[in-house]
Amino acid sequence: MKILVFIKRVPDTAAIIKPSQDGKDINRSEIPFIINPYDELAVEEAIRLKEGKGAETVVLSVGNEDVKENLRRALAMGIDRAILVKHPSYWNLNPAQIGYIVSEVAKREKPDIILTGKLSIDDYTYSVAPYIAEALGYNLVTYATKVEYLDGKIRVERETDLGSEVWEAPLPVVISAERGLNEPRLPNMRGIMMAKKKEIEELEMDIPNLSYSVESLTPPPPRKGVRFLNSADEIIEVLRNEVKIL
Amino acid sequence: MKALVFVETVKGNVREVSLEAIGFARILAEEVVGVAVGKDLDIKGLDRLYLYEDERLSIPISKPIVEIISEVQGRENAKYIILPSTSFGKELGGRLSAKLSAPILDDIMGYEDGMFIKGFYSNKVFARIKIDGNPVVLSVRSRAFKPYEGNVEGEKIKLDITLEDGYFSSKPVELKEKEAGEIDVTEADIVVSGGRGMGSPENYHKWIIALRDALARATKMKVANGASRAVVDAGWIDHSHQVGQTGKTVSPILYVAVGISGAIQHQAGMRTSKNILAINKDKEAPIFTIADYGVVSKWEDILPELVEKLNKLAEEKI
Image 1 (cartoon, rainbow over the protein chains, first blue to last red):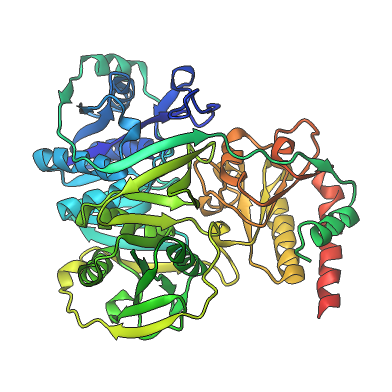
Image 2: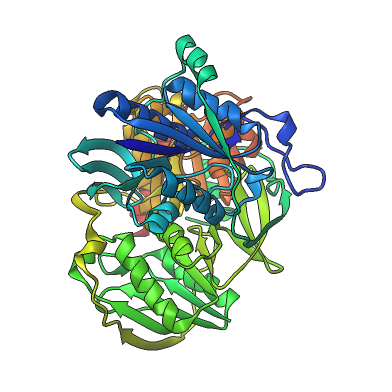
């Protein structure tokens, strides 16, 4: 069995993010970056499957040299090898282009399972996992909170805005990870040393052109500032006369 | 210009965000057609509504429904395909983008000067985006646009398509629906969230729920209970209630934060709320930097009284 995990490099969730001076990008050089937290769940799940059932695991990302740091971390956690599709400004790609890149690599690698996060917290897209499934004709189960691997199929607990469900799907399948799926491990020293020896394969790829551009980034509109209240009666007064919901 | 809207229903009822998607489509395009799964729907704002009936889709499955939407797109050749940004709508979006080789933008919250506005980095920055194609796939965030309120009502067309079983190879085998009365935080008019300052899961389940229910009774609005990451991680409540950067993003009319310090990750999930009321015993808590109204107090000294007074108000209203 072979598992392909797609990860994206994103700003740390605790980072203070500000638009850059020209308003086209963010203060990229000033902030720490991490593996997208949902993608990290996917990495962990792939490693657990490898440990449980035996599998070859491959991590894939798109971007510049910086992204190797995140691929190395996935390798240090226990992934077998890594692929980087080179792109100088990967953060400007449309989810459809990201989906295309993953699908093209998957056509070569032919994984039985593709794992990735349900959401990329940078451009806030949920589209990559379903794109890949459609492009490859793989089955799809999104928002997974528990995955069981049975013979030739998977059984997944998932959580949507309507409740929780259990799905079954035959392989090959794309699974998107939701919080609660697992607790990603921290790489240990041995893993970190091993990762240094593991290969990161670099690929060049022609990506379809799409008419998509981020014209400007601005801080969110400022809020008006806090007014302190002192009692339940004052709260009710505000709810009635200002928020106008009573 | 033409837009095609997927009208998402739950047990035959149109979801509010589908009506908002039609409202948004009416801003973008002169002609708006819809597609839905079901026998019949009572809905306004569509020049034509395509209906597809299939008992295998009592629970929505994206692969066959993408086939249906593509069939309608083949007939209508719409410029924009507009989806509700629900769990299911987001899944359709990615698939449609692949199937139609279309660029996609999920979770749109505004439209201005020909540009689409959405939150990047979990609303820490607002992005203005130009996107074009034939078609373009868009999904709209719940509560970002006004639902359509006019009287347009077009013809209904039954879709006569046969979908092979192969489209249903990935499917639900078991369901645990939300408890009656439980509303998703993204769809609520009011969200009441509790954090570590509540002290214990028992306090959360007693008093956050009590305030949620009292507000629902007093306002007759949709009220949901939310939570900070800290208490979700501590196992007080499942993560479908989590508001924040690795949880849900909400924009209710009123957001009430009780015992939540307001880390930047939490702020990212709730800063687009219309009104924010924070109750926290620490005057320096970061939540007060984005709140409109603040009460510096232990929750024990304010929630019980507030709940009681709201309940009394609700009784007087009836």
